Image (cartoon, rainbow, N blue to C red; front, side, top):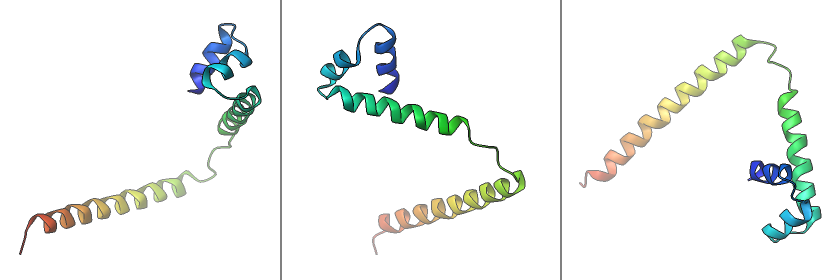
Length: 84
């Protein structure tokens, strides 16, 4: 949605016109755009991880947890299919 708003602004539409199209107040739209811009800046300026080994360990742990949950879901769904 935000990309569509930015394209509309790029095409020469004013914030007031866009806000009217969405049925919101122009200040709300302006606030959304400001917050999105700040969030995008935060994402682009984060420093890289200090220890890639720690990140890799965390990834392995999450993958193992995911596999346990996948197997548990398969077991429970099978148990629900087998009436006793």
